[in-house]
Length: 167
Image (cartoon, rainbow, N blue to C red; front, side, top):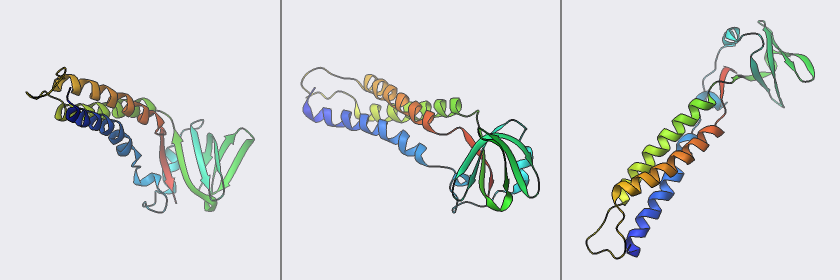
């Protein structure tokens, strides 16, 4: 392979590894306090007793099992016992679970697609190249596979939680 062909292939591999990470680094507006619209306290009524939640306050956060919610407070069972947090002190409530597998699959699909597209664009043989010829399909497959692995890992790192309340 001629040295001028190596540059696009390595560039394609680097892009296939970076683009999924960049795409997944974008968080939903609900996950960015101060930049999102409020989510009403009434949403907390959809939580089921025993469901894993995280209650974020100004200076710390609590994680535990949801117990009850009233107009004035939310209660959860933590490792330290039952805790009731006044509504005025709650900045955000998130429920956990159920999305990690989906995030892995989406990340792998996005990474594979981006990697295959970049690999197909960067691969191919030129009539004046030296050394072995690496076809577009092969490069697309290799770079797409790398992109799928990276995208899946990035997807696994994304928390599997949903914001239910945002003050």
